[in-house]
Amino acid sequence: MSVFYKDRVCLNVLAKDVENATEIYNAADGHVLIGVLSKQFATVETAVDGMKKFADQIDNAVSVGLGAGDPNQWKFVGDIAREYKPKHINQVFTGVGYTRAAVNNDETMINCLVSPSGKPGYVTISTGPLSSKEEKAVIPIHTAIAMMKDMGANAVKFFPMNGLATIEEYRKVAEACAKEAFYLEPTGGIDLENVEEIVEIALKAGVEKIIPHVYSSIINKETGKTNVSDVKILYNKLTVLVNKYQS
Image 1 (cartoon, helix red, strand yellow):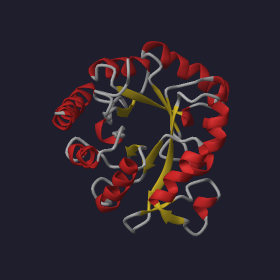
Image 2: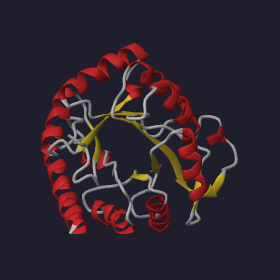
Image 3: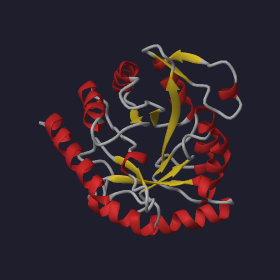
Image 4: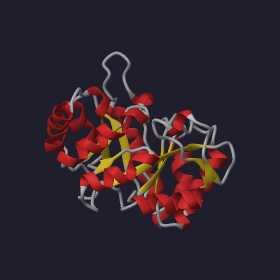
């Protein structure tokens, strides 16, 4: 089964443990990728072991995460991909080529993290461990997507969006993804209130596949688990939106 509802939209949320992941997966009828952060593991071996335990229960719908977009995790994530082939991998701009070669397939989705630049139509691509400490490298979004395709990426991960704060830049990213037949993954500050507006912009633009990342806003601060009830709300909201644009 495709993780994308009607081949258009798929949620990306975190899970504290395998039990939480299974509950989330069922709540979204399988149209979800479960983020498992590489940062929580000490070695590649333990990461591979741990992620496979998740994978066994959710039809391999694992999204290997950096952890808050941490560029220092890029190689660790790439090395995990040598041993374990998830459905989805998060990666910084400069780590995509390494990761595609490491995973050694065309099936695993790999996103490419770029950041808002402050100028609609342009994005910051200097998101690697060294480049992120230098003067920002800002280029047109269409050029950035072409470079992502060169490296073997499937999607723009636009992070951090800060909710609706960068919405005008996001509109241009969505338009570019639609024109270039590229996936889009809005990330950062997305919650139950703004998710519809963010996803609808991409659907209206004609983006082929959209993966909104909804993280801390739906995590129970006491248990550390993602609220299954919130996942159901999100899934229902996205179902209505997709059906609207499929008609």
